[in-house]
Length: 185
Ligand SMILES: Cc1cc2nc3c(=O)[nH]c(=O)nc-3n(C[C@H](O)[C@H](O)[C@H](O)COP(=O)(O)O)c2cc1C
Image (cartoon, rainbow, N blue to C red; front, side):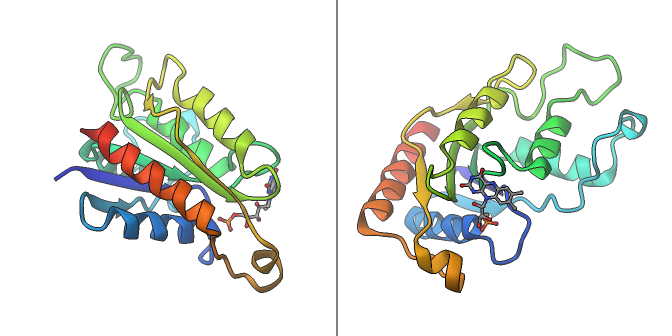
């Protein structure tokens, strides 16, 4: 069975993007193994501590290597991706041995899909910039360009912390779930 690693771009416990991921997991309904990447302890990238890689970095690299696909659920921060997510991807873009630009990395060719819950633009800017980042020559993830799911959170999310999806939004998530399972083969 295929393994999908879920990466949540928000670190907060009550994250709407985490809730969206839980909904996607329900839609997958056991047709793939789903795991959530815990990257909260990955340090800020500092080239002074790159080699040997800190344990938390090795752990996330191994999780990415073991997965057949990545599904990123991310909020949009200031029309872009959150810094913690960028930091994670920066670590994934770096060689395991100093100066080694030839050896393949876990992220290379990794089938990846993107979703996000946020404000009026439904994280469109974040997903656009994430696509640009993930397809850079150093990273080369195999991003499924569409369908993606962008959720504009309803009023109850902002006032009461509750996220409910409209039937249309649920359908969009379901279309993405089916497309990604097919993309994974
Ligand atoms: C630093 C920061 C910048 C934000 N910028 C945007 C933005 O550009 N677009 C947007 O839709 N929401 C923006 N928001 C609001 C987030 O969409 C909202 O906080 C959302 O709940 C975060 O996702 P989460 O619930 O998964 O943590 C921003 C929030 C923060 C903390």
